[in-house]
View 1 (tube, rainbow, N blue to C red):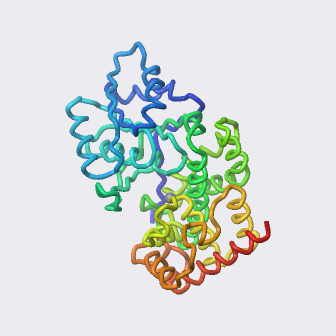
View 2 (cartoon, helix red, strand yellow; view 1 turned 30 degrees about the vertical axis):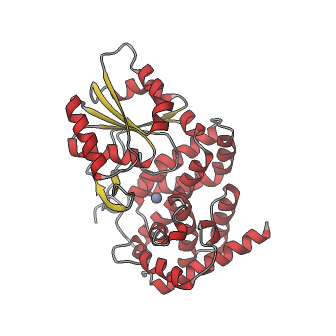
View 3 (tube, rainbow, N blue to C red; view 1 turned 120 degrees about the horizontal axis):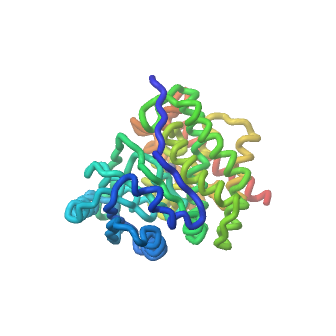
Length: 366
Ligand SMILES: [Zn+2]
């Protein structure tokens, strides 16, 4: 398998960097169609307009309807065509960004991504998750290119509720361990290639950054401040986690996330929190050394990521339900099978129960 590495063409991150949007984007076009969620619009529109002040660049703003569905993608495509726009800009969380990426792909125009929360890998990756209009998972769309420009304004990110940063750190926690599992079994990454040293180095740096600066960054963001620790952790959750996962591959933690989404108890638990618990389960499945498991547990405890079933919404352990999740996580085509030697639902069930008990034990210690 040939090794393959892909990434956004340009990634720019700083406090108030949206004010420099013009200099990072006008090489791609002169007519921008900007979609943003309501909150994202309020926070970023004045900065975007200010950046283009005194230029001939045409800006059209449109509020995103809230769902990354085929209907919404087609609605925005029509508006882009009507306005003759030659660049699409997606501003907001994962769903707005995923919709903008789909529009860019189908209309064959460049995309600029401006995330307003640090909760997701959507900004840097070359795929979208598409839902039905009712919000049920529908399909993944994979694209041949990554976004042209990603603009991360850390002041905007630090002003969002801090739970989004915790969600982002949960998702980022799995990146290194999943990449390592793919490397061990010589499995493909998310762009269907072998893992480069560069891709793996990003995944490793992602984990190291979280351990070193995660807690400090969270405390800073709770006070809506931007410090060097915040800059490092936002880069970890947005770039290192996204590009690291795309080029390093996913393994058990993300399949365990998929498995738990079939249980209604977990409906209100974020992707990142489920991936964090899934990471703990993966380490147990792999028979990882105690010190490594303890590092992950200590980190989760420090920033409030779940290490027990109760914390992901499962108050009472019903063995049948856990088995249902385990079976779903082990479906054909799931990345959990990239764990060296494969994983059966029985093995996963045991690892989930063992992880929960270990988590409970550590919680009693504090
Ligand atoms: Zn993820």
